Image (cartoon, rainbow, N blue to C red; front, side, top):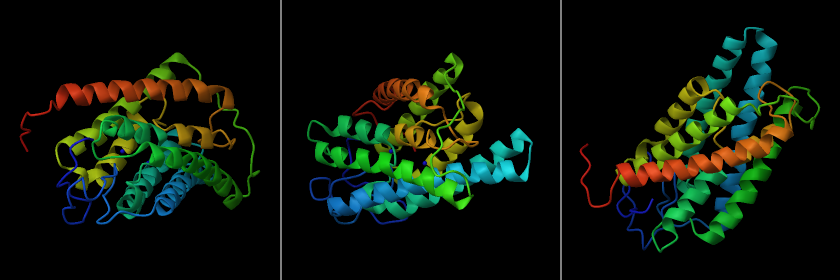
Amino acid sequence: MTATEAAGRESAGQSAIAPAETVPRPTPGAPALKASPLIAKAAAEFTGSAALVAIVVGSGIQATELTRDVGLQLLANSTATVFGLGVLILLLGPVSGAHFNPAVTLADWWTARRGGAGTTLREAAVYIPAQITGAIGGAVLADAMFGQPLVKWSTHDRSAGHLLLGEVVATAGLILLIFGLTRTDRLRFAPVAVASYIGAAYWFTSSTSFANPAVTIGRAFTDTFAGIAPGSVPGFIAMQAVGVGVGLALVALIFLPGRSVRR
């Protein structure tokens, strides 16, 4: 559980923000009404990433303790993730944009690199380590809450080709959604839209939609329901990078600059 035309964007549940040249627009959550200090943005990305992974891992552990039905386990896991991610985006979006995801951060930097509003290179250099360390911390925290070993490498192999394809689809869809909302002035719907997409992608993608390098790394630290074997991590991250490229290409193709979008 995140771009180029940002002036006049509305935040989730907030009033319209100032023009992009006055206030940088973070994505995917609500833009801040005034610029937040970088340390606050980093703290928001760390905390959001940690909470997100704690939700994913913790709900997975809880589900396996309550039932042996794998379908019910996945339902519990995905439901908790949907609600948790929506709340985190709504809460932390006004501070950092609630990326919680290096793929989204890099995509936002790429689209803004020629002077548009969005994530700067300096912000990206701070966000990504915060997201990764937060995700690892969230996995350790979830294990601690349920009396599991604090760090135990996952043995859940996810290296099959169809799972890797699922990650391309999941990540491309996420990027298309976030930057499509940006292009159509609908970022105010990000908390509901992004959380809903991730919840759906749990079920329609073979990989259960990690779609996030930081979360992928964090989940390698827990040998529980939501874990991923360290040997599977590089392949997942590589496919997520491919998904970012596909997603941005779709955004450029579908939301052509200068064309009006019917609401």
